[in-house]
Every structure is written in C-alpha cells, then in structure tokens.
Amino acid sequence: MLSPLLTLALGVVAVEGSALAGLKSRPTFAAGRQAVTNKLSTRTATPVLEKKPSATTVQSALNRATSQPLKTNPLRSLGRAARRLSAKAAPIKSGPRYTSSDWFKNIKSLILLKSDILKRISSHLTFNILLAVVGATWFHYYPEHFLNLGAIGHSLSGAALSLLLVFRTNSAYDRFWEARKILGSVVDNSRGLARIAPTALPPKAAADFGRMIVAFPYMLRLHLTGRGQKPISETSDAPDVLPFFDKDQVKTVETYFSRPFATLSLMNQILHSQQSKYPGEDQAKTLEMLPQRHILQRNVNLLAANTGACERIQGCPVPLSYSRHLSRYLTLWSATLPLVLAPMLQWWSIPVIAAICWSLFSIEEVGHMIEEPFFALPYDQVQTKRVADVIKRDTVAMYKQQLGVDLATREGLESPEPQWQPQPALV
Image (cartoon, rainbow, N blue to C red):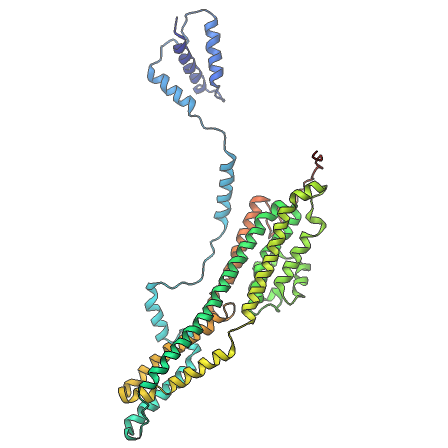
C-alpha cells in the first residue's frame, strides 16, 4: 500500500492531468485531498496512475498548481483607466525658456533688429546715437571749442544710476513673481474643487459646478489681459470656454464687469441651491456631507481672493514719480556721455556709446515690461493660457474618472440621481 504522502502527490498529479485534458476550472487542493481520501476508503492497492510519476513531474505539477494567477485586481483596472485618461490628454507646453545654446539665435535677433526690447527702445537709442555722432564730429573738427566734461562726474553719478536701475528692476520682478504665485494658487484651489465636487454634490449639480471650474481661469485670463468687456465669442479663448457655458450663463456672465466674479457667483448659486442636495437626503446625510461642501465654499472664497490679488497687481503700478525720475536721470546721463568719451575715443565713441545706452535702456525696459505681468509681457510669459489649460485638462479628467461625465458634451448625465435612504438615528 502506498504511503499517504505519496498517494496525495499522485492525486494532485491526477487532478493536474485532468485539468490539462480540458477541464475549465482548476479544483482546489481540498478537492484533490477529498479524492485521495475516497481512494483510500476503497481499501484497494490499485495505483491511481498506471505509471508511477517521477519526482520532477510531481514537483512541476505542484508548482503549476500553486502559481495560477488570482482574479483581476480592481485596483489594476482603475490604474489602467487612469493611464488611458492620461494618454488621451494632450500635453500642455510651457512658455519659451532660454538655454545656453540659444546665444547665437539671440545675437542674430539683435543684429537683424528683431528683438522686442530693441524695438521698444529704438527711438530713445536712436536719439542718443545721433548725439554721439554730433559729439564725435564736434570734437573732430573743432577740438579747441569742444566742451570736455571729464570722466569724474559720470563715474560718480553712474553708481547712483546703477542703484536706481537695480531697485527699479527688483521691484518690477517682485510683481512678476507674485503674479506667478497667485496663478499657482489658482491652480491648487481649482484642483481642490475638481477633486471634491464629484463626491460632495449630486451628479447633475457636480457637473454644472465642474463646468464653472473650467470656465473660471479663462474668464480670469480675459479680465487680466484687457479683453474682459468683449463678447466671449469674439475672443481667442472662445473655443476653449464656450462648450462649458449654457446660453443663459453666457448672457449672465457678459453682464458683469468682472467676469471671473460672475463665474464664482454661479458657483455659489449651485452650492446653495436645492440641486446641491441628493433626492431624499435627510439631516444626518447633510451633516455628513457638510465638511466636504464647506471645503468647496472655502476654495471658492480663495479663488475670489486670488482674483482680487491679481487685480491689485494690474491696477496698482510702480509709483509714477519713481519711474519718471529714473527715466530723466538716465536720459541726461546718457545724453552728456559724448562730452566725456569723444575726447578719449574720437570716432570710436559712437559705437561705444551705442552699446552703453543699449544695455542701460534695455535694463530699464525689462523693468517696465515685467511690471505688468498680465498684459505687457510678450508670448504670455506669465502663463495665463497654460494655467487655464491645465485646470481644464485636470478637471475634465477627474470628472471623467469619478463620474464618467464629459463636461464639454454633457454625456454621462442620463443616469437617474441616486436616492439617499434615511439613516436610523444613533442612540
């Protein structure tokens, strides 16, 4: 008679052979053990298989029996869905960045007179170059009558001019950096709304609220770039924002002077309307959902604060007296520079003065440009368009993943609203 362990192994081999022969489901070890027990109960010495299997066959059968894959993990399916959503979302490019390999391109744009800063300072620079030509000609033909100022005065006053330029540029850059931080806060608060709204509100109200989340950064962008009073359909952002507005909402928003605040007002109306509650929602469920809805209201208030901070930067420039004093100082200093350099460099003073004036005027103009980060900077370097596109991409993806709703096309809202059953009171 075979030993029990060997008989058990032979039973497993028999079960594996039956599975390989075409069984649809693999029996468990308990079933195999029960089959061996039935064999032993017959009190027969007849082997289970006609040929005794080798130890290698038994070991491979045991390995295959214990290495069968488990059922599909639902987390894996969720991860695959998230990867499909991220694959469909088009990458959003950031603004142009300078690299060390761009030096030749930058010099080329300067030589070909394609530099934006050079175009803005061209009149001032041309005026000083003409003064340099006059100064060099005067010294060349009438050196005995030339007014030589010497280098001491410009050397001493040049230090004060440098400090003024540095302070002016730093104050302008602080405004630019503050604008970037505020827009970053807009992204964070909008993502918080998009993350919580699908679970804190019924699907219909959550979808309406999500469309306002998408529309808000575009309304803020139009407001800050001087296009806030144009019809939305006539702006370049119309294809991005109009699919998320109803006709009545467009009319309502366009009646406001501040369209971002109009969008926030629509959010508040949704939060405090009857549609923000589930059908059949009782007081206990309202109290349960209150923390999440409180977060929604808080983030809406933070977006209102972000809008006010952006308007503060837009409406309160650097004091005009500071900018005017610097401009006058720089103009007089550069205009008298030929009276200093012409006796030293003669005709070479013309290109030298042109280079000095170009560098100083450019620094001053950079300060003027970054002082108005939402409007004056070319290529939207403060990234208002990118911020709006990022919020739109993330909000649409979150709603698609959590609710299965396409905010632009309104698909996925045909299912009936879930009913909340009253919960028994806790004793």
